[in-house]
Length: 264
Ligand SMILES: Nc1ncnc2c1ncn2[C@@H]1O[C@H](COP(=O)(O)OP(=O)(O)OP(=O)(O)O)[C@@H](O)[C@H]1O
Ligand SMILES: [Mg+2]
Image (cartoon, rainbow, N blue to C red):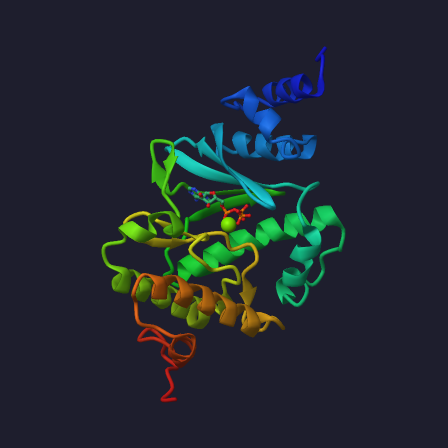
């Protein structure tokens, strides 16, 4: 018998043979480990995608990100919360995406579709040559991906290392090259790109692509202009000469990797 809710969660996790490093995490992560999520983790552990779940690295608006281990080493596990996600905000990004035409519009289905969408977006970005955490698998509301960092310590965000970046111009060029590849090769707009969703581990790494949309999405252009604005604002503060109009034109023109490059 378990005496309280938290005790029950721990027992359930144990029964499902999911090793959770610190039972305090269960308390902190209220709203994450419901039974269907524990079962999804169990399926992933049975299929050898997760060996043990470690501590929480981040508690965001919609998801919590955990450090974990698989058979080979470190991985990151992002768990979208079904109950406390802002699913109305999610809807705006899913409606208009032909890949998700048939999903029902209840909260659980939207969060599950969102998780799958992040996996697919990361794959598309990776295939286009953008440095992102290598996506591994998604199961229900759980996304497993490459861990960016070492020995349990995740890499910092671009925001956190702003003053230490040795080569702001080079970093700006790398990021805008990724924006170009994303636009032309993956056919995607990140849609929440800023110094808060770029990690820095010797190089910039784009993360958090659940909200990324295809270029055909009705709000793709608006999201693209917003992404450009965030990047320009950040790098201007670091002394890089750039402008929104210039970057929009440059990306739209296509980079050297775009075979359809046009003159104007
Ligand atoms: N693959 C990864 N490897 C290491 N750390 C990661 C990884 N993915 C995410 N993180 C860490 O978790 C944090 C949150 O990740 P992400 O932005 O994807 O989630 P989020 O819930 O959408 O967050 P927010 O709501 O704060 O934007 C990141 O800022 C980063 O510190
Ligand atoms: Mg984020």
